[in-house]
Image 1 (cartoon, rainbow, N blue to C red):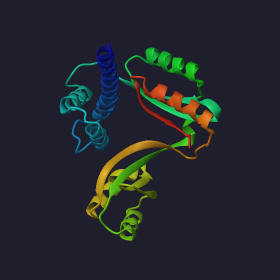
Image 2: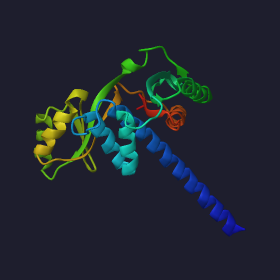
Image 3: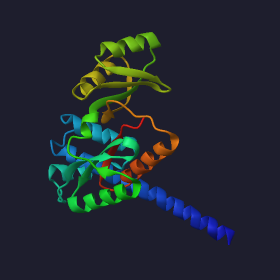
Length: 236
């Protein structure tokens, strides 16, 4: 019996992992699809290039990436996706933005509201939460130069801020400068580990352990929804 129980547990764990991977690939494909509407050439379409790089980093199969691009450019059929941002008041005064891509707004709205009802969130008025966030360019990079040399080059590149990490540097910049700063760093022998456009809170809030746990549960539940592509909060 124990062997059967162990096998059943293993199969269950694999099913959970496979489901999460499938969910992630669906989210990544949708982001690629939307980016590809502005053109299917990643060399000319920087948003598409970022989306593809993120998908590759998650080991998304090449065939899935190509299919998402073709759906975005109209070469393949498929339902039209709508981009919606839900502004949310979370527990203990937290502010949350949930970005979704959906082919059925009513279904998605019902799913989001169900999660909010369960975990203590509520829909906020338009603009009442989004003003807490800025769209930023985030670059992870490393360099073989000395710390002084590397940090001077980061500053000279026009980046707004940076911090030292175990793997190199995490660099923050305005969303419109992301491409130029990446190219600048590459020309100065930095290796770009990743680059993305992300929403960052202008200020964060610090909560005690119990209240933080409540916010995190809500964030995780929202992120598990198939149509949600990105969740951001001002939790410190």
